[in-house]
Image (cartoon, rainbow, N blue to C red; front, side, top):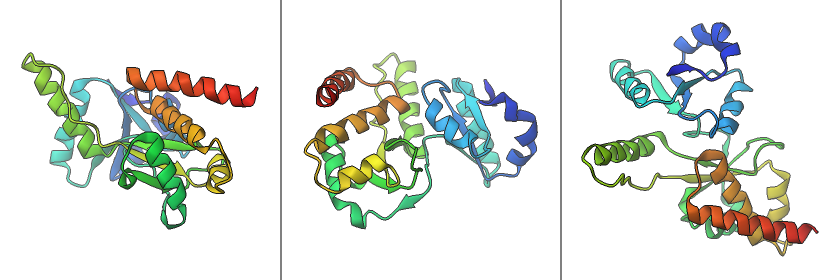
Amino acid sequence: MLAPADEANESGEKEKNTERTKLYYTTDPRQQAYYVNLYIEKGIDVFVMDTLIDTQFASFIESKKENLKFLRVDAELGGETSAESNDGIKELFATASGKDKEKIHFAALGENGAAALLRCPEEGRRFAEMMKMYSAANGQDSFAPPIDEELVINTESPIIAKLNDGKNENAALIAKHIYLMAVIANRPATSEELKELLESDRAVIEQII
């Protein structure tokens, strides 16, 4: 189904959307609710494209309209900043997430925004989904190459600022928890990630009480 995620904005923003180079969509408005709200708060419509034919239709439109690009809400976050002064934080979150340092980025996402979010570049994610679809159609296991996820750290978050001073003895624990919460806000967690999240929750609560 192709429709704006926020029906209240449909009539007021529809004409504006036709003039945009980029059109944003969600494949799961519940799972990706945090991302959807980021756009709605800026007055940007987000389309619900929750069926296979929707995403195929988007690719068809792009092939006919070269100046038009569909992007899922987690494909770009904007506000990217330099990582030069954040080497310590980059190392901390690379360890916490198990990702290469090249996959750790920084962006100004607001003082009240999430401490970190996952970003999934559009082309890599579409390719992975296409491979999964072809494998399933051929009766094979639904194999898909790993989605090229990137972890984006919010440089305006007070939590990140406290971690950046290097004085918090629980920095590794907090970084792990922040990463796992970014996963939950983006996609279903794997069984291993769910296990790690429960362990992280327990450890964080123990530190509080």
